[in-house]
Image 1 (cartoon, one colour):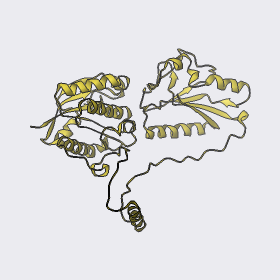
Image 2: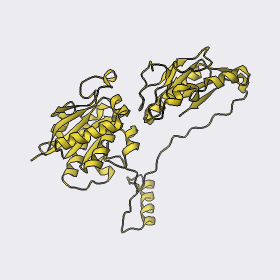
Image 3: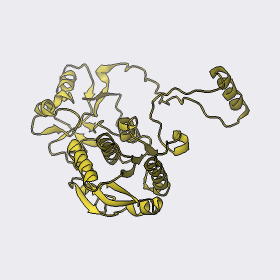
Image 4: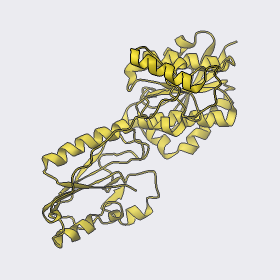
Length: 348
């Protein structure tokens, strides 16, 4: 008898729509939907998707606990043996949702789960220590590789087999150090690896170190009284109504807004789109996050040359590193073209 599986997907992969439908609420459909067809083939006759849980990315971001609980209840209702979520690749909100429902189901029901995310998806850092996450490409072009890997990891768990190393299973490392026992002492293993490295032979480190970007600081501004200063924020300050539809978490875009002649960000004219902190105080006085009023005072006092007439805003809440880096490169280019000398970057 085949194992019973529930599959979680978003509005896009369900064929409902893109960003315009990201607010659709939860829906359960019998059988396979969208990428579930590929899973049906990959799982063979060993497991079958009995139902598909669908939820819009924005809706999940705004109702995370509620939707996660609904997924748990759906798994119970269908007497499912496992949960598959995604794959979500580098889609930030979708990835966070897939990882979140997997963690909720595993914690509540103690059954196998699996998702697949791009390494820089925010869902990885949030849940890598809790659930198995197959490393996927940055887009749906990697579907053909992700699905068989997810199916293999799930079937191993269902069969009671211990998963191998992340490299063997195609999983993202959990970042948890575990004691291992070897016949060869550590010093000898280290020298052996060094010799292989010197010879150009393949070797595997026992503890991969993280890789960080190195950014050389710019020299200080020579004369602030003549400098053009710009404001950039990851605190989500936008004109009232959020015209660019910047998401509350896992941002896919940033906004550029004109503040020429604006001396104060007034309540009702500006707001925050950020979903990761209490919005009350930021909405009462948006200058608390984006200090336009203070910069205007410094401008009048001659302590800065001028405030750049455009500011840039997005949210850092769960936003993928790759997205944030792309935003920074584009915003930086625009500021350089505008001959801005310095930037004040505010957060929350």
